[in-house]
Length: 116
Image (cartoon, rainbow, N blue to C red; front, top):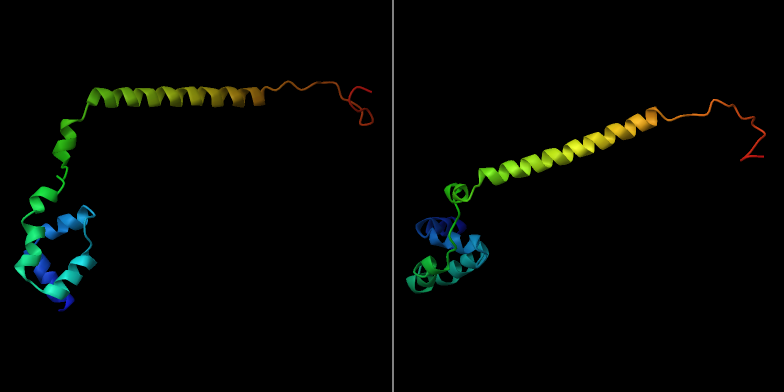
């Protein structure tokens, strides 16, 4: 059996894709079954008739939007903003301390080390 025939067969049985998506089977294993048994319904019935039991429900955008809480999102954004403000303030103070570092005006002779 050729790959093209297998592709045409899979188009007639879209339930098989759910097994691949759910990592229960691979396209290679399905192709091997097809190569051995062809389009024999007794082999494929367990993948097409029971597909409704083994298929995990797919989530849609609407499902996610039902659980979306804009107040919670706003709180997370505010917390992130506070953290960025604190980081910015620390970075500014560190830069100011480096720039305003007090250097002694007394020139030390090169021959003196550590308080000689």
